[in-house]
Image 1 (cartoon, rainbow, N blue to C red):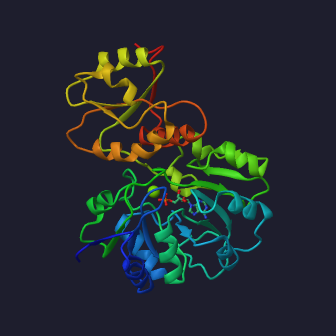
Image 2 (spheres, helix red, strand yellow):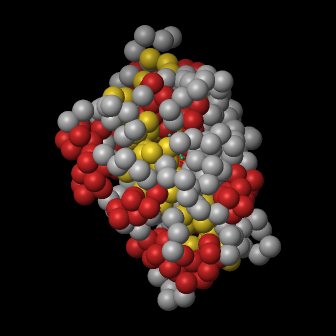
Length: 344
Ligand code: AMP
Ligand code: MG
């Protein structure tokens, strides 16, 4: 199969993509978070292709992408007022809500659950494709399972050339990290995954928020968890990643003392002068957290090279978007963190 790439702003792109979706084929779609590997979310055979092409575990449910909040009533039941309040505040945008699923959603899409994850992406061409296809588009991040997510059309081509018919090229993803996921099916709203909509923003609308343990700790492979995707190895380049925390100076002292030829340093742009001779790669500016979220996955992909030894990574501190960057980087590092202020 030849993989075609069409620019998002070309006149026939949305039509062509929607026709493939309706025919049960896969299309890689741009969003503001990451590129998705999309299929008709109501067609179990089409959805099965996503799992096969990605190599995704069958118990990891997909997010349904919709064109507007009205779609919620077709897909979900017992929708709490909080869902509409969140949609009002943050849709279209990087927020996914977990709600009770109606029976029209195939079990393959939701991996046998009784709940479904729904999101309205902030990307005009993708909403147009959804409208033209007339179905919700099920789409996980378009990377091969376990690898860093895809934030450009080139990343998708790298992982799936010859295996999917179409990639819609919408340029680099603005947010660069997967959506925030909030579960609204329990008494209290629960954050399952941090992302571009911050915990602070959610709290402002919801007045309450529980943070799931999958966000802050390593989850056992056999565990039964609310966020199935979070228990798998994620976002990781081939080499082991070690986060080195502490002040700039302490971290540079530690890393320079342990650096071996072939290792790499993943740092903030402001720190590049501290790592001369240590093959540093900056993923953004510490002073501009949005640049860190936008640049993280591209950098992790660049480091995904069997020739790389150990990756020493610097991680931003604090809330807001930095909270989501910490979550992805800690998962990429399998929670291996060294405090340079105390370590020798
Ligand atoms: P991905 O699109 O690859 O970032 O993966 C989608 C994420 O959404 C995974 O972490 C899933 O486990 C999560 N997810 C999807 N549906 C549900 C659901 N019904 N309940 C909880 N988490 C979900
Ligand atoms: Mg993913």
